[in-house]
Amino acid sequence: MPVSSNKAEQLLAQQPLGSLVWIYSEEDSAQAIEYAARNAGFSKNEIWINKSSEQNTRIFCSQCHHINEISSAEMFECERCHIKLDPSNHYSIYHKSYLAYPIIN
Image (tube, rainbow, N blue to C red; front, side, top):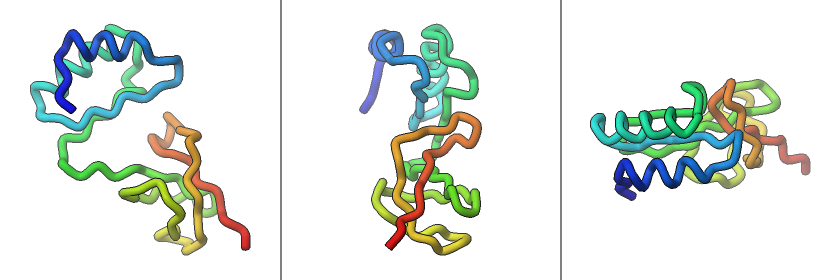
């Protein structure tokens, strides 16, 4: 969704602490939104810029600590250890990914 600088500033100012800003945009728009996010109090580690058209989500495997990239937040198999994982809504700024828990049958 295209967002103007004014609209971006309004949206960012309303976000709770611990939020993450993912920017999928062209270079010029991304810089304006990053500037608005920094003005709203987001740190460099909380702003993630992706200029590609692919919007995969990074998921951290709690079993082997591999970071997988998946396109939907559904159950999946880890690329490294092949255990079935269920993504959670717990986000790690350090790993820039969501935590996934093993599914026990």
